[in-house]
Each structure stands twice: as structure tokens, then as C-alpha cells.
Image 1 (cartoon, rainbow, N blue to C red):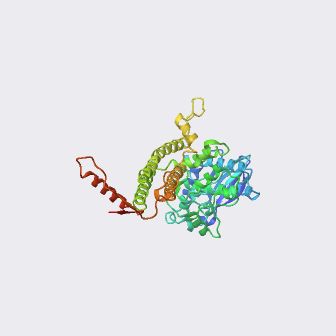
Image 2 (cartoon, rainbow, N blue to C red):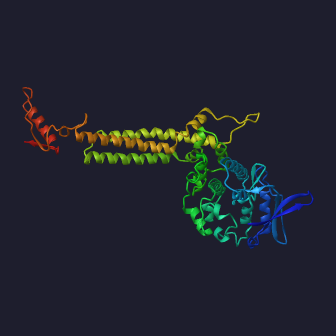
Image 3 (cartoon, one colour):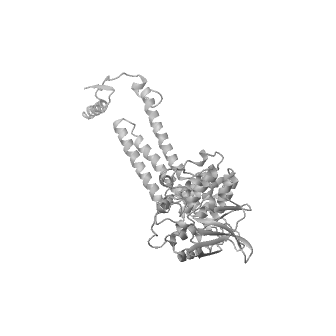
Length: 449
């Protein structure tokens, strides 16, 4: 995207970095518009952001300068060998803080990658903030709608490019940075990016259509929370990712702790599941179970209690959905809301309900609710199967007379008339005929008439 030079600012006798746009990007670039966009990025002042010092052009060649950071890039550090889990978390936490600050000020990076992360004095800083956006915005009207594929790697790098950015979606926003963050984090953990291909086109296609492997399958010592966060960031749909970089910071700050921290990525995603959608899925499942139980009772000959029993199991899931929705929403709000501070500057603690929701959220999750529901239904089905088997084998209280060997197949029975009270000559024959009719429906009996 640019060519980098180390220079000395004579007025202050300090080393600075001067970056000049690559010649292949100059066609269709408005130098003045580029300068204005860079000046917007220059407003960023944060410990983990390398600031822009100045910008201009020399003979129509746009340039900008930044402070010289005495240290290696994250790319150079990766080339020396894998990072420890502690190093990975530390770097990612600093990068997430930089993204959170920039996004809060309306600046999107669009080219997060190890080359743009500098390491110095035990911390990480992100460079080139807003430059890719400035190049895109500075393109003249005739060139502004060129696709990212046409621009190659000029605006964003295919290895870390979000699907919507690769597709040149005009609605691409700050969540593309979160995807690139996830791709970079994946590389820090396992030693290579989530997708690898021989050409940029195939690489972009992989971002849009292929699912990455869980980093824990490639590096077993990866904390569960960290792996879940990375996979959440790599979601194809921006709506399925954490929605703010501040969410990443909160999760990364709890990676090495225990307890409710493990549920953070699931909570960040689960809090967005509409309750109406969950209830609709439950209603559809309940209807399916009811139809199946009714048909099995009529066709297979299941006991009459199977239908109400199965409906009872399904109805028991409704309060579970309500409780799960409440816990996940409360925990999501606690994770994503910036805590208020007391007059002394210390953050306030969450309320009682929020604290309780955070504690139980690892156990009261949507995944556990669905799995628990299917397990309950499966257990009920197993009980029905067990009942039918014991009845057929003549075992236990459910055993049938035929199963016990009391009579053989198509046993002949005679039903005599019942004795009725004096004065009612029709009651006895009527009851006897009703019993004969009922017994005649059995495939195991032959009723003489």
C-alpha cells in the first residue's frame, strides 16, 4: 500500500517514518482528498495507536509521516517462532484497545495484519490507522467504484480480509476490522492464517465460503475462551461476530481468569438471539412431537399416556427458554456496557441480577437449553421404548398376558352374558356385547359370538 522510509526530522532531531503511496495507487487518487482523510486519522491519540504526525505531497506524490517505533513488527516476531499464550493475549488485548478507541472516533482501519502491529517496550501499537480508508475515499468519481478484487491488495490484504470487504459490499463497516483481528489472532495462535491459497482470488473465495478449523485442534494449550473468541470474530456474517471492539477487550481481560469468563463469547452472541425466534422454534418442535406421538399411538399401538406425556416434556421447556433468555440478555448487557464510575473514579459493580446472570451464564446458555431439551425428549422416548419392550416380553408390571405366556396367539375366548339386577333385562346383554366388541379389536384374541 505504501513505501516506507526512515528519516530524521531536523527541527526536533528525531527519527520519523515517512510513508509514500505506492505508484500503482496514484492513478485516480485525489491528493487533496487523501490529505483531508489522513488528517482525520491524525486526530487519534492513544497509547496503542501510532499517530500520524503530518501529511502532504511532493510533486503530486502523497506522503504522511509517523513517529519511529523502536522495535519489531508483529510479522518479524512471528518469523522468529511461535508466541506463548501470554504473549498472544497481551498483543491482542493492546490491538483490541486500539480498535475500540479508533472505532469510537469513527475511524476504521481496514488492513489489520501482523505487518501493521509494532512491538516495543512490552506493548503493541497499531500503525496505518485510516490509511486504507483514506485511499478508498480519495479515489476520484470515475474510479471510486472499483472493486476490491480489481484493486488487488491495495485496500486490505486478502489473507485477513472480511467476506463483506472481499465482496466490495458498500455497507462494510468496523466489523470488518473485527474479522481481520480474528484472522490475525488465529495466526498468532497456530502459526498460520485461517485460510491459505495459491492465489488472492482463491483466498478471498475461502474467506467467503469455507469454515476455519478450531485453533484448539491445532494447538491444544489454547484457552477455550480465546479459541471461542477467535472463531466468533471469524463468522462470515458480520451480525454473528462480536459487535464492538470493546467487547473483545472485555473478553481478553478475562482470558486467564476462571468462572464466568469462559462464557463471554457465547454470551456476546447469545444475547442477540430474539426470544420470539426461540419460542417459534420451540412451538414448531412441540407441534412436530405432538403429531408424531399421535400417529404412533394410532398406528403402532403406543399407550394413551404417550401423547400427553410428550406434550408435558415439551411444555417444561418453555420456562427454560424464558430463564435462558433473561440470563443471556442480562449477562450480555453486563459484558458490553461500560461501567459507570464513582466520584473517586473507581468503576461501579454490577447490580445483583447482573452479577447473578454473569455467574450462571456459563451454565444457562442457549446451547445447553437446546441440548437439554433434546436429551429430555430422548429420555422420554427411551422410557416409551422400554415400556413397549417389557410389555412384549412379559416382564414387570407393563407385561401383557400374551407376553407372560398366559395364552397363545389368537386365543379363543367366550364372553357370557352378565347377570343384571332384577327388573333390568337389557343391561346384562348390553354390557356383554360391548365387551365382546372391544375384545374383538385385539389381534391376539378370537372372540366367539
